[in-house]
Image 1 (tube, rainbow, N blue to C red):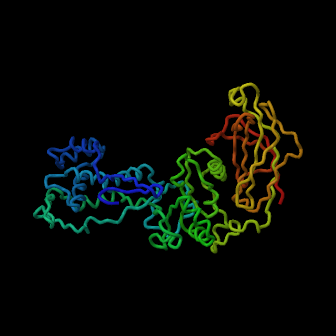
Image 2: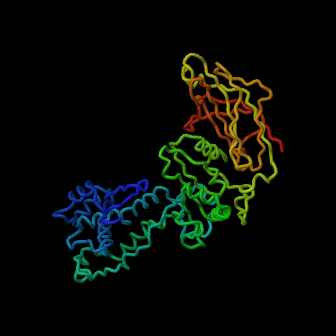
Image 3: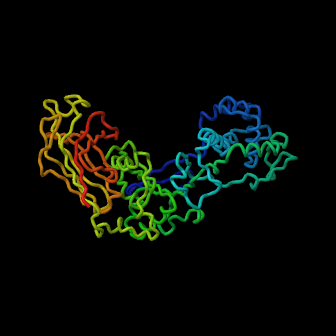
Length: 460
């Protein structure tokens, strides 16, 4: 990058050059400033009017004084008030969003979990029940009083000679300033879990801040996949997630909003696996099914083997060597509800649909099974499968991470078979016996009437 321009190599043959914008002020901001200023200067009265009318603030005189006081160390304040540069710095500075956190504090009140200092251990889920936590990257610990630009209250000039406000113009009584600071918790103070983005290789993974404090790190799926290829790095991830939170998010090249396999992250202990929620595919269905466990409350307890101190986890890295803990047998009897929920020409224009069911298993490598399908039932809105030998058998070694995948399709001889419903069920939630299984659409919304009648049997 040079002279405000950035160069990108394309196919190693030619370059594209982009002119980069500097810290430009948006036209709307300029118009607002002009509305509350005279000859390019926003006086104290102008600022008070702006805070009342545009920002809907209360106690505006004190806040206007605090704004002037907070900007004086930046040497952008004219002696008669704020110029456009100073006003813009106020808008994008901490002084403008601190009060948003006051609103959060007032809205959630006692539900908002705010530790007194950075935590060296996460509270238990029971302790955090019905609490709201904020997790984000904390702002830098900048102290305006420690700025290199010293303020001289008697002359109204900074030591570098630029004009600034006199002491009388920016005076805030010490008691009022302390009262305001006590009333509005600082931005940093409301952050329960400090977040950072992982940079560099795995050799420095988790070396954010103090190693004795817990926090949250983020990495994209590509970085995770690169890590998974090295066993020691995978062990390191698991050990890290035993005391900290790991967030994984989709890579930016997924321009069609597709998703990645969440099990790769779950098997390494990641607590937050972000999705493209508009990307309706099997991986999103797996995520929705995974969190149907525990009553669908949104919290699923991490398996005990991911909490062991050594991080060895044969369940993840050597699952084929483990014994089979249980075997699931699945039989499908019938389905119904499509005629009630769909137009009679939705699937086939000239006849009833030709349904078949596919069943598979997602989980650790030893448990994963590709989708297998039943016989097709032709020209029936209520398909019935009478074949005694049509039973699906799944030996399971790590049931804690096993997900039974089910979908229904309508056979189309002239093109792609049409989607007719799906569900994904955590093995921990399955009950033995003959059960009714509601189906969901491709977005994950449950159908009003569509369901399957199935039988589940476990042998140990």
